[in-house]
Amino acid sequence: MRIDMHAHYMPPALAQDREFFAREPYWEYLIQPGSSKSVQGWAMPERMIADMDRAGIDKIVLQGEYFLQHESAVWRNDQVLEIVKRYPDRVLAFAALQPKAGAPALVLRSAIPN
Image (cartoon, rainbow, N blue to C red; front, side, top):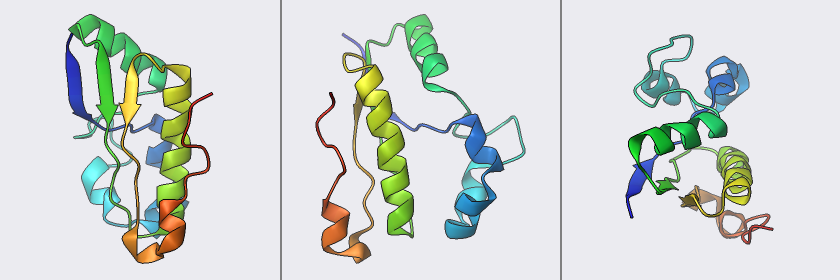
């Protein structure tokens, strides 16, 4: 079994999300919005799975990114949980947390995929 232990989910719509970059300005330097060439890449979940199939990857582990704002971590966790629910046999994930948020940082809306 081949497992990619370190991957990030960067949907194409993120490149146009000015509200996100206002909350998390340093990410603009990391993912190069407005460019088709990004260090992280741009892919919807279906493309990610297709790329895994082409590369012979059985499972992937999405990493939890570091965010300045708690709301950004919640937003990202919601996205990643949906992908895990859609592809439970293919995708595992770490949660994103903002430790300065205190106790709210430890609460996921839905930790168990349906």
